Each structure stands twice: as C-alpha cells, then as structure tokens.
Image (cartoon, rainbow, N blue to C red):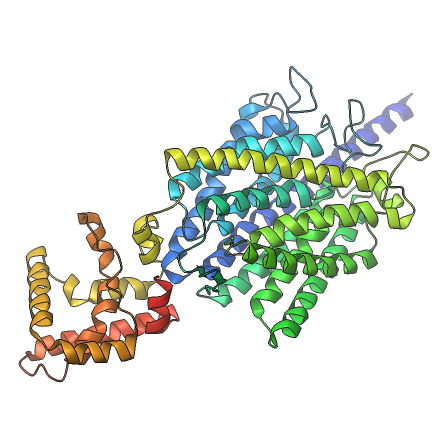
Length: 563
C-alpha cells in the first residue's frame, strides 16, 4: 500500500516537473518571438526614407501596445475560449482573463506574441503614407476580431478545421495543417496589408507614366540588422510551436530549427543569385528578403517534413517571391517592404506545398498525437493521398477570402470616417514632422534649428523673411534662371505652401533646400552683407550640404522624389 502511495506521489512530482519544464520552454520562446518586434522596427526603419523613420517606429511601438489590449480583452477569448458555448466558429470565455485560470497564462502570452507578429506586418505594406489614427484603429480591430477567428478555426480544440479538434465537427481526416503559422499568421497579416495598400494607393513618385520607380530606403545597415533579428525570432516561432520539451517535444523542436535554418539559407542564396542573373549585380535587399521568404515558407511545415524537403521549400519560396514582386509592379501596387510576396504568398506556398506534398506520416502522427492504427493523411509525394493537399488548398482559400473581406470592410470604413492617407504636403515633407513627434536623427533637427530663418523671435524671423523676399525679387532674373535650370532642373515651387500656423513649422526644413541655389548664385555678388550675415549664410550652406548627404540624394533626385 505504501509503495503504491509513493509511486503515485512520484508520478505527481514528475508530472509537475514536466509541466514546469514545458512552461519554461514556452516562455523562453515567447520572449524570442516578441524580440521580433525589434527586428521589424529596424527593418522597416531602414526601408523607409529618412523623413518617415520616427513615424514608422511609433507605429511599431503602438502596435505592440494596442495588440496587447485587443488580445487581452477580446482576442484570446475568441480564439481559445471554451466557456458557456462550445462551437467551431469562435471561442467563448477567458475574456480579460476573468476566469483566473493560471494554467493558461503561459499559453496566453505566447499566443499574444505571435498575434503581434501578424498584426505588425501591415505596417510595412502601408509605410510612408497611412494616417496614424487609422493605423491605431486597425491594430485593435485586427488583434481583437480578425486574427482570433482564424486562430480558432485552425488551432483551437474546437475549430472546424483544426487538427487539435478530436471530439467535435472537423473537416478532413487530420484537418488543416499549419504547424507554426504560415497561413494563420503570415498569410492573414500579409493579405490585410495588401488590402490596405490597395485602398491607400502608391506613394507619390512610385509610378511615373505607368513605369515603376524604385524608392530606396535610407539605411541598409538597419535593414540587415532587422533581418538578422527576424531570422533569430523565427526559431522562437518554429521550434517553440511544439509548446513542450517533454514527450518528444525536444525532437520536434530540433527538427523545426534544422528545417528553418536550411530553408532560410536556401531562400537567401537562390534569391540573390537569381537576381544577379537577371540584373547583372548582387543586391543585399534581395538576399535579406530571400532569407525571410524561406523562413516564412517553412513555418507551416517545419516539424512535419524531412530536412531535405526544406531545401526545396526555400527554392520554391524564392520563385514565389519574385513572381509576387513582379505581379505587384504590373498591377501598380506599392508595397515598400515586399510584405505581400514575402509573407502572404510564401506563407500560402509553404502551407500547400510543404504540408500537401512533403509532409511525413511519421512526423504528422507525432506532432498531432494521432494514435497508431488511426486513419491519417500526409504529403502526396511521400505516399499520402490527394485529400490532405485538397484540405490545404481549401484552408488557404478560406483564409484568403476571410482576410480580404474583413480587411476591405475595415479599411473602407476607416477611409470614410477618419481617412486612411495623410495629406499630400505631409507625405512630401515627411510624416515625422506631422505624426512622429519630430525628426528621428539629430542632424535633421539641426538643419531645422540652425537655419537663420528659424533663429530669434517671431518678429525677427518675419523680418528676415521679408528681407529675403525683397532681395530675391530685385536681383536679375535672367542669370538666376539659367543657373537654376542647369544645376537643379525643375523648380520646387510646385510644392504646397503651408496655409496654417502649424504647417509653417514644417516648412523650415524644405525652405533651405528650395532657396539654396538662389543663395549660392548671389553669394559672391552681395558684397554689402555684413560679416555676421556671411557667417550665417555659410553655416546655412554647410547645413544644407550635410542634410543632402545624409538623405542620400542629390538635388535632382530630391526634386524628382517630391513629384
């Protein structure tokens, strides 16, 4: 009798130890996944122009905050709640975590981190032109309603296509297989971003007479650092998708890490070399996008395929990425960070090809705890039937239709009420001055503060403006026109002039850039200027040159980008 009691006690201790180990594994991967927000911030900051850096960083920060509140209050309950009414469409219960069930806290926080990844994808697609208030509203709706219903359908224990649904209605022998979120996370977030950028329209200057014009970001260094962090974070998503280290969880996690590494490396190399063959040169941006495309494509099947299959998944992701970029340009859709090709299209391709063609019977049964002897479906190329491939295609189609319909309705409503796009003058001069709290870099602020027109009180600034205007109108116009046309091409006078007192502050950075050629043309002719005015003029020239170098654009490219 005592031996039986001791044995039961020992089993309880072992079960408690296993639960603690699994919870520690879940939390460690949660922190790794959340660190991807830093990767997205750096990647997006480097990919946008310098005048929009602070704005895009603010969007990423608020994305994490708003996603937290949406997931905490409504999202988690709709996704995983199993309260008063169990159904295959949406969850009930666990709203605001009011049920005080401490056993779900680790699961809650890791699913919140994954939700934040899906929600933040839209920021790259709508970068440099979306209204900040509308973006905040999108974040909350996406995290609290749109994303959770997809999660419930494919990942909850009651979902109508979930492999984890063992007791209730489910379509398919196994269900829709998406191990770490190729469809649930990346396809959903990417398609929402697609609808956002379609309704917003392209950035000013992105397409001229139907010809696409590439708009370079301001820092490939930040982009590369962000890509490294995202690659690292993908291990938290793929290897952590097992939610356990015990009961063969460590084997599944190790397999997922291996497949993630191979697919990312293959995607980067394939994309880089294909781009080199097409254009005759290597491109760092293409290599980064290829690595991320490989990570995304292997996400839904990382623990369900053999390592050799991940090599083909990486190659397929590269092809899908190129086709996606080409299609967007043909359709004149402006996606600054290639969110749709990398996340939406590669996520769908990995879900269909990886699980529908390459998934292993052994790994599928282990991942979804299917007892031996029970019916099972797996990859067509490894001996499985056509059923699983059809189920994968159905799940992708359902997700696409749902995400497009919901996001179109949401963005259309926001456009009619708050407005999606910023004003033209805001987009031309930069969102940082209007919706970012100021410039992101100290040199930009120095260019604004050191300009003579911005020193002193209001009366002195107005006096200087009148004197500058008087001098410019009394000087010879013929020599000025010839000098200006040769050195600068078209004038920037077509830029909108601030009409409000608030807009006047945003004209400070543009004014020295517009009047620089006039000041230079008459610097040697105006001998009556005092030494103080000469010093002020020379300092203005230095500031303008520094700003131009820092922006990474010549006078001509600056003028063209403003059109």
